[in-house]
Length: 325
Length: 243
Ligand code: SF4
Ligand code: SF4
Image 1: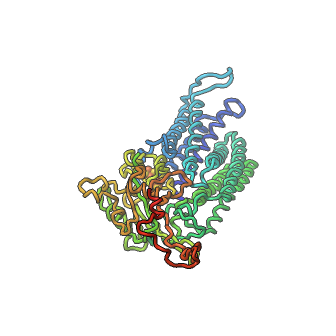
Image 2: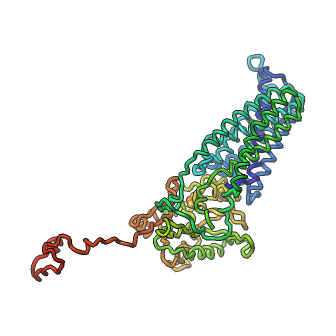
Image 3: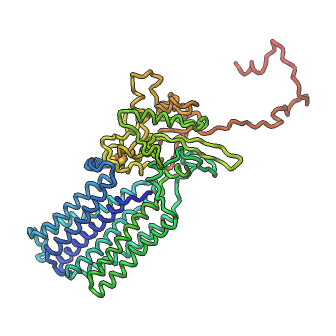
């Protein structure tokens, strides 16, 4: 497939937003059960949510460049019963709204305690909103992943690993950003987030490499034989019926030379996983916000390469019909 | 249920592209807007077509066959392109099984083209919406046309009659009969899309005759010559079997 930058930015940016929110909420949950110190609401959760919302909106903005008719985008909420894309279109704004509300409640201090659990654990409004938003965050990961995983003949994508990778890669980058944010804010959560970021990155490494191994061994079900229905071992296309390009020759081929293709694979394997883990580890030692920020920047760059590769690697069966001019 | 479709006979298609040009001509002149042709005389011309004819070579030189292969939307009975559309712009008609795109609803997200294994949907560079074969839906029901012309433009244009049009679910139709009797098959059956368009395979036009088939091996007179003709009134084996 041809990797479109609009979709690359959409999926990576919202992944960061989702991950960052999950990090904030995890921090709050831990502090409610008194494992971690309580943070100051407006400064930490308020500003943190604002950053998450900014990432989500940037992603949404990028997605509009993918459309031929962005002004009709509202129509895409219509078919949520059958289309994962439609479901994503609904869940993304809902999630963004919830995170914004979560931030607002923290920032404004309008955060009444709703009830107290076992006399010690105070459940306030933000905790409830956060729970809903968490549910939406995971639903969004599911929707985004399923958009790709549900097309069964794009065999590189049609695996549960696609959803798992979207979830883990998004969470990892979000937790890395949360580490940098916590360090910059000077809160005591830096080590907590840093540890999670390393763990998630390592987990994402395992599942992403699993997907790479799976895809390297894939046997494509369609062949020229099934494509034109002629049972002969040797079939060669001599003409595709037109000499210039068409939508079919542009949308479904990445067009990069093999060396570039391989280079991008190794780039993302290095930038997304070992480098950020290394930087996070250094940062945790030195407690320096700059190092964490660098870890995030490197990981995000790597994710752009990762997403490019994700698209470029998948082979559409329609390509069988468009091999020679 | 009614399912209109094309049946394309690869045995007689000569790859003349008459269906391509007549399709373009008809569909670029309709009320739905023209089919874009960008830079038609420039360096990188590109355009929207509903139908394209490809050419394949089968076999090893010198024993090769050239197969011309016209391809347009197959109007699948279980179209994977329809449920993925977020707006409902892509839909399949209940009354005749034609898969269409509502150009006024389409947002041009291209998701349906990803979900079609056959590569027959094309995003129009001019209107920025997804386009594909409509089976000339604006022609086949047009009562102002003589009945014989209420067929897709490609079918009318084909000089070798390689394209049959009809309801593949009506066993008496020309299309269904051809599929049944001439080994009609579907493309990429492995994905369960159940394409309504079928293709008729190449047929052998050579017969092999061995020498002993020309000379009666079991001639009791051991000589090849005319057997004594039976008498006019004599019963022959033909009379026996034609009771
Ligand atoms: S051939 Fe492609 S576009 Fe046409 S109905 Fe089937 S899946 Fe849809
Ligand atoms: S490009 Fe148009 S028809 Fe295709 S899925 Fe998107 S909205 Fe539906």
